Length: 142
Image 1 (cartoon, one colour):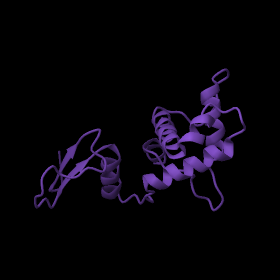
Image 2 (image 1 turned 180 degrees about the vertical axis):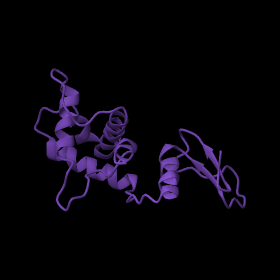
Image 3 (image 1 turned 90 degrees about the vertical axis):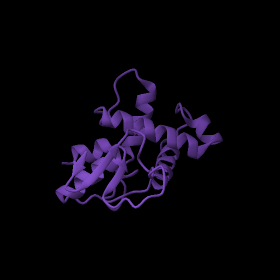
Image 4 (image 1 turned 120 degrees about the horizontal axis):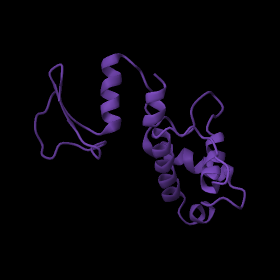
């Protein structure tokens, strides 16, 4: 795909990846879904604050701890591997969000209810979004 003299190589798993061999590659981008969205936002003049994934995972871990009540499905895993659990549940949240989930809790679905409780803690003081914006958040914001 070309974009005003730019060559874009797109792949679902290419976010954060570099070219396979060192080369002068001005105007060549290897991007996944987030990278492609960032390119489109840049071309359209849409400014979007970047939040590093490590920061999003740390924020998710804090949200999971805040929502813990002794009965959440993730609490035993969180006690053993906080970062791994937060990373996995953040991926779940982002995937659900991209599919249209808005943080609601359908009746009778305990895991989703637990995640909805975490999501309710998302708006934080200072007006910032807890965990940053996923692809789903970014695409709906326009």
